[in-house]
Image (cartoon, rainbow over all chains, first blue to last red; front, side, top):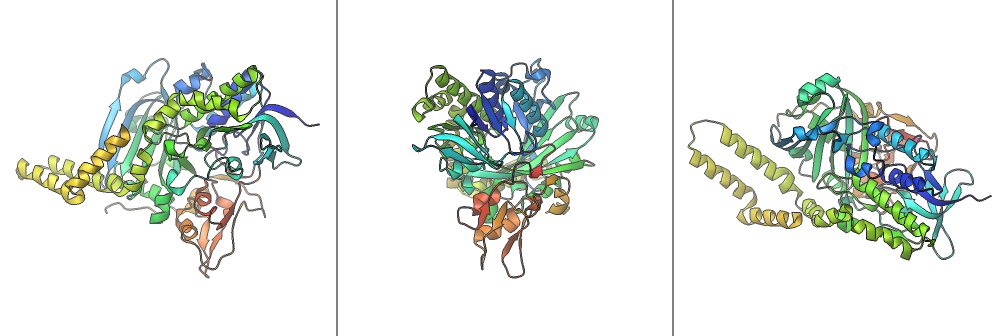
Length: 434
Length: 99
């Protein structure tokens, strides 16, 4: 007997769980496939979770979701080899009844989210790799082939929540493989320390948390970002750079991470910690211009698989959750008016997503990925070094007249980048940011 | 440079991770070649799990047991035909405790 589902969701990450939960809670018959032993066992993120986007799916998530710390302080560090210049923002306003941002540990969070999906009525099948989309004679997607014996399952619509390197969409030609210049490879370690030690080192108490994001010479002229996120009893520490830059420089991601851990600004924060996991993951960085076709006959694409990641603001899982929810809402609308899951009907998903912050934000920064890709040595090496040198010159009191110091600093910037280069970088950055 | 870089071998890092290896069924295969392409050669540095290594004949070989399934090699080498790439069978491969 062939079992027919209303929807098959491929993947149990943020977007897949959001879609499966939304569909199942509206009474649709949902099958969710996950290749990991349990939901979360294949998923890697920094990880910061934004409450607002989860609240729209599970309003009372704070009652039982595994959350680490809510964030009260954010630091941005521009680094050279021995220093950092920082902007810190801290506010007691973030100690609100319903905090805005939390650090999470994905393996634990995804297990919780998946439990909610099952409680909403979806069938979740783990240890099952989806290998191919099944289509009818007209090319409409009607199901998914899996690596289980006799493993073909059928549905009216397939939600591709298979992540940045998902097999199905790329194999079926629904989306291109990401290019080396539109994805970053990030590596991360989990550094365990007692809760009180983390509190002391980062100046936080109780469940308060602090985030440090770092750019500069730690990425060795590649376009990249390092991060330290405080969890309850651990620090997530990682760095990611564009795959194209890694291939060109032949740097090793793990060596880059080790060098970052040895930076004099970072070393004391993790001193004495016990590392319990080393992970790697691709991050979609292509932005608006890399978004594939999002819907077709019998299918929609959500989350990382759709390149929905805002690299400039380091927002990914909230775009994933939102696209999963919106896709599900579009499917529910089509079904409620007894419409078939055709390309024309599923276009509603794109209309709804275009109207959300997801596409609006990505559109705002559509020129940013290309700018950073082509200009990485200036933004990630020259400028950080110049900035550090200027700060140090300013702070060191050595009998040099201030006017001379100012002249030297200006000259250093012009020498490194020329007047025209400085103006052009500033203009290009401003235009891409606008 | 005043940073003293402590070298941690990647193998030792991977030792922290949990894997269920699908013995005899590697999910990534390097196609036979005389001389590796630039991207394939780059993998001997860029693969975060150091799965790719040069043998004494100057060819690139893979041992996929420590693979973290990130997909970097797929992005660099699948299109050009250097490698054949798949996910491990359901349940097998890396199993993140934290992720």
